[in-house]
Length: 226
Image 1: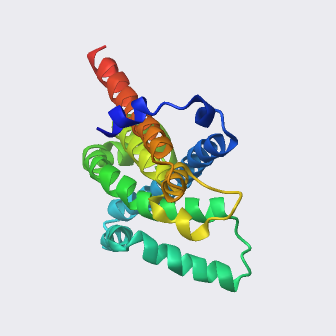
Image 2: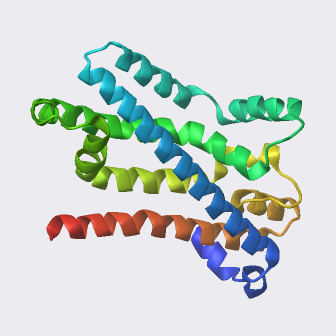
């Protein structure tokens, strides 16, 4: 119904408006930054996690629990805490970086938990061979682990990229006149009683999300068949 209502409210002027284009650019930039930060944090965490597994140290459980706990922190609560810290530091952080960092706090646990199972499976299967061949942990991560989890890695990256497009509500706290994402832009259209434009923008947002989620799955299926 949203898609039908949005298509019926097609607005060419809105498509080429500065505010709309800025919101699209900001959302894509926030998602890209959030995903980049989360990939770095996730791979680093998995590397340390697997190192403790290799050493048979119980600290791998502590790492898993610590990262998993972030999933249970409400996004607005974390946003408020970081906003307070930013306020105390005289707002030295720009909004886009704050929002990206907040996003990464929430999507890193998703990536970690989703990929950790495959990492444990690879650890159990390859541990003896890796030890016999004396392959370093970093080489193992790049040349063995990542190729084996590439399908899972692409899928979870696509998912968290889409989640970050919605900026996880944190942008509403750090918003200023020069920075807005698509969800905030849609909210402002509603607030200004521009319901048709809001539905049109929302329908474009939904179709873009469907496209992003569909293409990687399609490509992965084709690769598996070939």
